[in-house]
Image 1: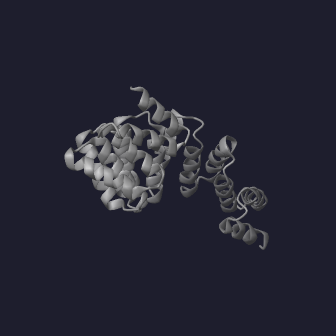
Image 2: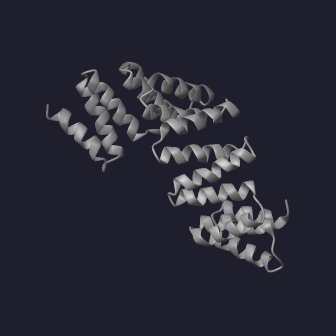
Image 3: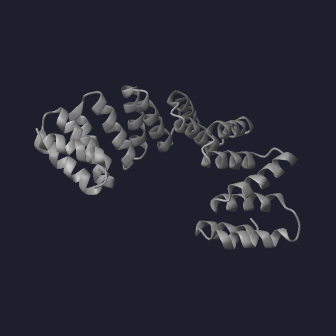
Length: 248
């Protein structure tokens, strides 16, 4: 890696986009360079100057189809909620390089954003096929399955994520949700408690409160919902759930 590239990456890691852009423009004064222009497009996207970034990407893609540029174009389209077109570019990257994990993740995210969870499930399964030790992919698969009411399979996926990464708070939360919907409330509460130990998540406090409600353990439910509201005071759903129990 050349020094200019190291300098740009250091700027990007620190979130110093304008100095990075200035450096890129200085280098481009010496002549057009595809690698430098690609960095410029990434920087412009980070600065939310998507039109300028797309102009560069499209110009370079007209010259040559490139995996990184296709991925970048998809990401810019995704940022602008153009999920259908973004998916086309991510899919093309997977055709060029079936092992490009970023492309598979982004492709799945396009369908999550459109609430087409049966499709995103397919792509998360592809990710865990490529890398069975990818805890995030297993957890995302669990979420896609939860949205489809496939609770047993969602539980299995969440447990896979936990087996790989025991302190994965969101995987414990999703395990709790799957158990809750399977009406296995005691086990769900244990999972929510583990999530809370790791991250003190207000959603886990709330979900635990609802599990207690379903077990008719009202005092425990009140305590959990009060803790949830303390951490998320503007959440009307939590407030209404607590008021319902207190008014019974």
